Length: 132
Image (tube, rainbow, N blue to C red):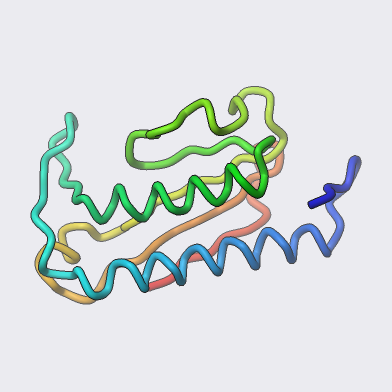
């Protein structure tokens, strides 16, 4: 996909929004059947994480890397393939991903959790999607 050099075109913003929305919907399709059925583990910071968090994040990051290899990513969970994305210090665009916000609710089977995806342009938010 072609990017505008000086300013972002509305078509490019539409493409980013469309992809972020599609990825968030796919995350819901993956997570909803597993709510209340996935065991939790503890991360180093003592917060909880599930295999579903990792599966959603991997799907999102793989798609971003394939579609926009020159974009950076900040993701809540550990990056499985950190070299698949551009360096955050030099990339114009950076995706910020929380694959499963509300993991404790998800673990308990309480249907109040979401996927959050944003895109920054030089550190300024231009796209944001939260799908609950």
